[in-house]
Length: 442
Image (tube, rainbow, N blue to C red; front, side, top):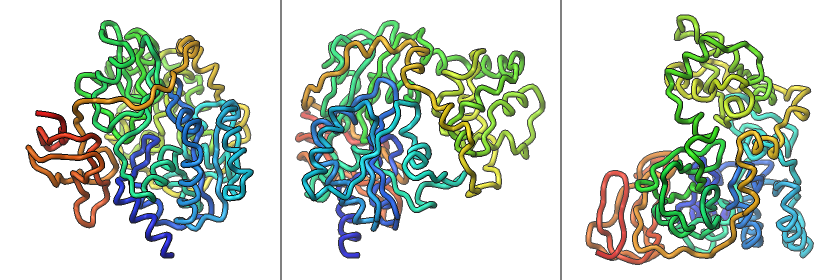
């Protein structure tokens, strides 16, 4: 119990959050009790390579973090899951696991399908159990931690806070790279280091091709959850799906949806047995919508993986974007925590990643995979006070104060959910707003 408490406290002090994109404060996860801890090294997003690089360069730290996390949650089963195709990483982990200290860790080799790194899908692949609809993995005794989070747990145990993260840069860039980037570094600066200076005709995604968000590189900064930056042509399918007007999406949904059901039949959550039927939501687009419509409120269970919009629909409709809107309009249906079984067709309908990349027109970028380029030096950072689930962190410094890398500059409000923020470079505080703290040399 003492180790459980100390690990969670050290992780809280270090400001560790879910680095896979969720941003949930890790110390809260480590305060739970679980039967199984799964390390998520699947990295299933197209054109995202930071986890793969981390597993190659810091495998021992990842395994240390996995054991620390397992001890904290009292997990009897410890699993590290990664794709079968990650042969170099597998060889490194197998060598370490043969040396005794890590012999109790299971290595789960996954198929190259999308989205096998989704928590619900990964839990099923590892345990054969389905996370209840409306629930989370801990409801069935499972905790999932991304490998970058596990690395940060190991660092936290050594007293090192989160000030950097690995970020892969791929797509329409002269030099695809993976950097160790200070939290708060500008996207433009990272892209410039890859040889990209002009964004004419291009769009920038914070995250992977399927779930990343379009951002303005001049006003975007690396956060603890930034794993990838992807640059694509403005007329590429992944960008057009995101930039089409909602009016057009609704107009198409109302007029041409032929109820082929592909969006539902290929939905990963539907295949796990959950009650999520986007084709029925599309059917209702042509009628007056009721606030009590249970089908439309099922949108709350959409993971926004993008398969329905970017792969399944033959007519260019975007059920994902419709679901995002419906989440804001309808209350959750009263079917939370219902238990389901995966559908018999689950295995046969998993989407091969190679097929998805070809459909999206991004497979060609894999001809030049990002190269590990080490630490990226920057002169200033703008560190967001809200990189995590929970409350905004409160500044502890003032403009003009000196700051050193690793120094605590913002803290969680007492008794609230959130994460601590630390300086990622040496310098002086040059600006503080409600959103961020800027550090540089005035």
